[in-house]
Image 1 (cartoon, chains in turn red, purple, blue, brown):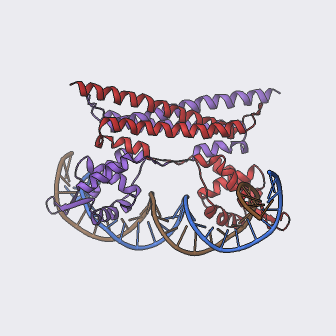
Image 2 (cartoon, rainbow over the protein chains, first blue to last red):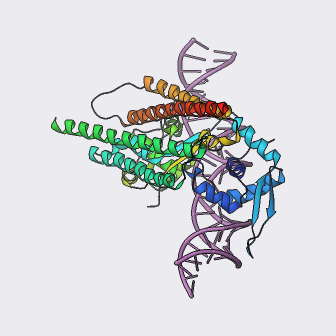
Image 3 (cartoon, chains in turn red, orange, blue, green):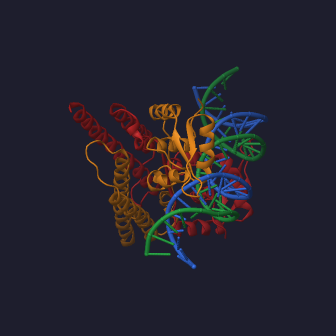
Length: 184
Length: 184
DNA sequence: TCACCCATGTAAGGGGTTACATGATTGC
DNA sequence: GCAATCATGTAACCCCTTACATGGGTGA
């Protein structure tokens, strides 16, 4: 068993929640994991082929009217591969945060502009919160068993709230410091 | 003026803090921005050439003993390009969080293993906190003007603390729910 | 002497996005 | 009739990491 590619992970996971077309996988990703695990058509369609070749996925043609359509589902081997991955202990965590990079180099700007830079990052997190809030409102709240996708959504909301508030506090600190410097 | 590449941003920023060799830029990045903006030799050296061709950077050979060495510095155009970028309002923010993706699909595992999965994410954040703590201890605390790199470090520490604690709470929630289910 | 750091660079390959081409169906 | 959505796929291109090749300097 070779390692799963990064697209394979999200494809196997999506198919575990039900049979889907490539297009349907893309739609699901764009409405959920996209914020921490994106995938494009250029990855999904070729990978579905490879996964079928290696026996983790099987597919059947199920046209809707005259529109061709290929529905994919997990094989038992695919379900096993998904579980193996879920149980593996290594997990990558990569971040590219341009707002933070700008803040890192903010000494190249006058303090007032450094403040604006942090406020821009704050606005970015607030915009994200709006988007996540819309998604949250659209997902029915089901009680009883733990809803893992919803848990991830709550994580995203909490994280962005924390970040937005941190930015607000940082902006105040920088401003206070700039006023102090100006008085000297 | 074409857009700056992602490496160019961190190179210009690094050179603004002082002249450096390609190796020195890499070292600085690895000790600071790496956690939210990485760069490799395969990007840095070719980009330094391009930046010199477009006049944002200039370089001089300054061998140390018999060891060849090329020190790079910003030109006035380079400093202007850095400021233009810092003032631009669009900032990308991308995340790849495999632990969260696993949690998203955790319904494929029994609850006890779902808990283990969140605890693994928690440990990941705690490990990161240790690394950041070491860096923090190594950087001298200077008071007076705002220290932007240190501010970014504090952001990283706060963020990972928040995430670790969220994981601990989530693990408890999943565990409590599993016990409740088991009693039924 | 040996390990470790300083220093420059490239080649191969994998990962990923964007844009395009193509066309059917559904609902207003 | 038109726009939006469903649906499949590819080609070009950029980004980025890893590994390798090469060698001098420094300190225990």
